[in-house]
Length: 538
Picture 1: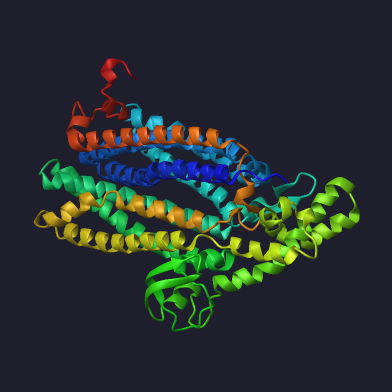
Picture 2: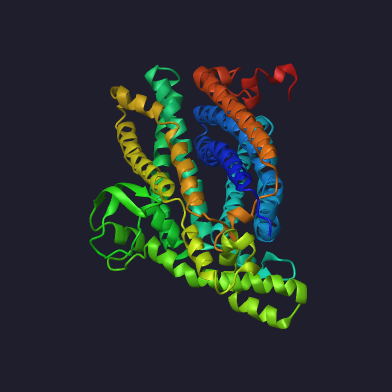
């Protein structure tokens, strides 16, 4: 079997990571701002006070910029599955494509349909109808996140699928198991609510900028307080669901949890420390310079005080029989495709649960052919494959700590923001207001590192324990991948610069300039491009 050039696999992974990380800069703000807008507009409809309409329209312009660029960067990602990950699409397309199709047909169209009414319907719809539209946009954007994270959850824990020897694919057998996978549901809440934190920080930071300069004070002070309350509720939910997701991973993806915590050997509860700092060495399989908090690791990971945590070395050792079974499964499957022999089919079914481990052994087999494995060389192949089951520990360990550290920073930040805001003495704390401005990008940084934890910790699998990443890519040339990667990097960097330019422009000029005709005007995201209704855009 001819394997794909490792450089092509690496470039394909880097390209997808690049596009996903860029896309993930825009999506969390969209998720959070929609519910923030809906909450403020609800206050407007209930109280009838025009200031809340102005607040909704101003932050709606910020949302509009972010929404447009989020859609632009997301479309190309779906094409990449077909162009750069064709073997993955063939093997896993039934399970991965189902939630993506539902997302496109129902959630995204719902969001895209109502977002136009939300922007241009202020004077065309009644207050109640416009509020309903805003809530539907919020619901649609978060439903989009739900279906996308169900698709991602299927890659992390492919519930509801079974390998079909007739099609050579992992096919969907139980849609309910796929949709209600614990990993997918916990990840949806954890990730989407992290977007609410990002939106809260954006609103707080821009509001703090106005407060420091004594501009738009009524809008800024009200926005600051509402975003603070929104943020403090959201970060508590993020931390709680993050802990729940960690417990799910402990049972479903224990090697990933080991990498997150730097656990090389089985722990001895309850005194095991949670590592604040360490320097994991993947080659030596040990940590250097460990600094930890005793008695914290076991309850944090297992939610008990006496459950040992199996280490990565033990999982590596335990992988040997699964690799042998997988080799037998792949070999039987290859023979069955030629002979259609019931005996070969029975042999395959006996070892089918370890099929992915057989795929993983292919690159270590003589001439990368499992049929060439025999009694004299199988031990060497198994031994060479065992270390491959572990992810990059250094990357996963430090990405996890950056995410967690920022999460607890947000908890303190929102607590102080709420205290100062409720005491109505924000202007007495200029240093904190400056911290608010500088903290605007920090939730996005935490979210990006959270994504790295989830995806780097999943390696070497593109579909957990079913399909290795090195088998999932398309068979392109290195030159083609380098060319397309350069193009994506330039295009997405341009999108990012446009986003920053428009956001800075709107934030700097403020709500008065956006709401050109004053109260009651139809503020539109198109205005930031210098195009107004009077110029015949609508």
